[in-house]
Length: 114
Image 1 (cartoon, rainbow, N blue to C red):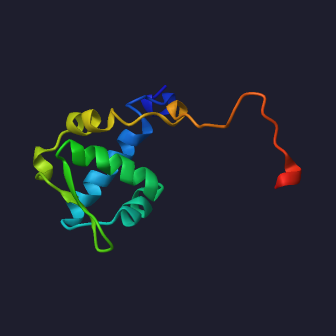
Image 2: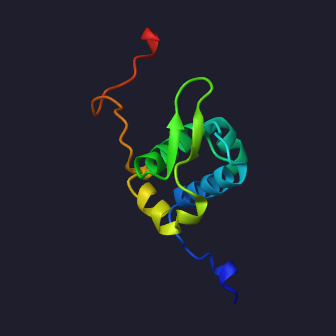
């Protein structure tokens, strides 16, 4: 059985997205918006912004805000390792860890007030 058919675990899905975003930024050589990165790596722009913020905090990318803003590499692509990217995105919580306030336990929805 080949390793490809066994589904080798190499890290959280956000690691794959972060690596793809870095590779795409390196190939483009310019500033790219989160929406454009999201389309390129087949993800949601909000998720991309979370990933890119972690990469920004780690000094891997730099961001420019505003309508004409986006992300670009702060370092040369030759200086960035998979380990650097992994350490940068480790701080992002898993979706399962996100807590949502749904009100008090046992509280019923009053549909007549809707």
